Amino acid sequence: MSWLDQVKWDAQGLVPVIAQEQGSGDVVMFAWMNREALEKTAELKRAVYFSRSRNKLWFKGEESGHVQTVHEIRIDCDNDVVLLKITQEGHDPGIACHTGRHSCFYSVFKDGQWLAVDPVLKDPASIYK
Image (cartoon, rainbow, N blue to C red; front, top):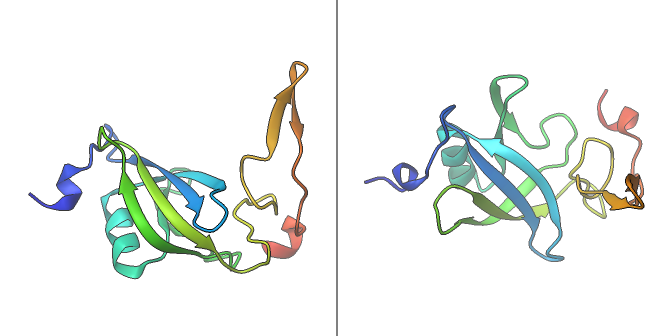
């Protein structure tokens, strides 16, 4: 049995993926992978996701330059969630979010509402041309 066959893919052939920065431990992203994306990620040591909205492989950083170098790939105890230990490249500090922030998890629930608490490090208009 192939290591890819051990992953519990959902009905669409996808698995959820968490990207965690190796140095800081920050969770910077959540995305999806199909079999080909996970295989390419392991081969290239670079995060490759599956874009559900575009229905195609998404090489993280292909437009923004904010590439994720993959140091380790883990799977959870149920074999249905993948964790990538990454270094976020392309900006210091690393930008993982399309909003120009370090992490996609920049909002906190407080007093009945979501508040953006992390700063925009780079204007998205200058990232995506």
